[in-house]
Image 1 (tube, one colour):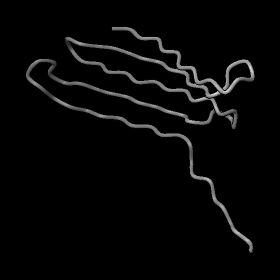
Image 2 (cartoon, helix red, strand yellow; image 1 turned 90 degrees about the vertical axis):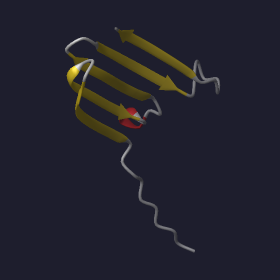
Image 3 (cartoon, one colour; image 1 turned 60 degrees about the vertical axis):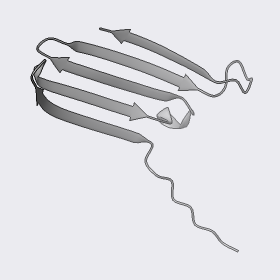
Image 4 (cartoon, helix red, strand yellow; image 1 turned 90 degrees about the horizontal axis):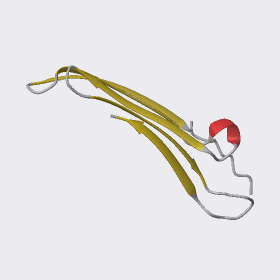
Length: 79
């Protein structure tokens, strides 16, 4: 039995533009890489920019820490 496997892309990017009564015009950006360079480490960025509100968040996720099968998430943010 021969099985052909095709891996899907591990990255994703989103851009959003909106308008509301509180923030007026708003821009949002999001980028995620679930398997950075084949290492199994996930990286992410999520940002929002508006007239009254702006924020950013970066993240790193891994399933192995010091050769132990233990997951770890690290986040940094700005508001």
